[in-house]
Amino acid sequence: MKGCRPLSDKEVEGIMDSFGGQYAARDKAIFALGRYTGERISAILKVKVGDIVQDGRILDHVSYQKKNRKGKTEGRIVAIHPKAKAALMTWINLLAADNILTADDYVFQSRNGANRPLSRIQYHKVFKEAVQANQITGKVATHSMRKTFANQVYEKLDHDIFKTQKAMGHKNINSTAQYLSFMEEDIEAAIKEMT
Image (cartoon, rainbow, N blue to C red; front, side, top):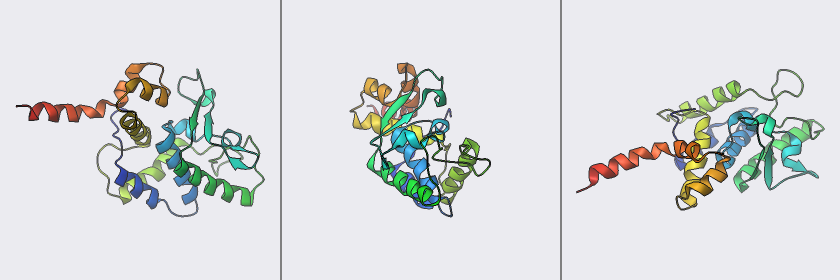
């Protein structure tokens, strides 16, 4: 979503702690995948059990199928951060306690119909409630998870835009540069501080 900003570490923590109710574990797992894999919400919600679980355990990587990604031209395999893995494990264990899971089952199912993924509109509502509960201001939406990932990967890779491009799964470096456009504020501030 154009114009969304990344989240600060404090905002990420607050949102994660704000999920509650019957689907808190699900909502935390979705948020953790978005924040730690940098994938778009539409692809995250279409992850199937076989994309993250093998022989009864969570894999070290998640496979985002090309048919579920923007452009539908190629899939993407991303390492799963330990925090995302823990959140997924909690959710998968809750699912497995009530159901026999197959590789073709969606991990984040809608309550409307058998084996249908949760809609991005529904998760957007859940996310917005968590944002409001933390009194977070500015343009923040589910795409902020992807921007947060981009920002932190860029920092961890010592501002290497080419490695950040690979981490984001972008074909074009200009797409990556647009994700980092929020840093224009830093540039403006630096210009104003010049002597």
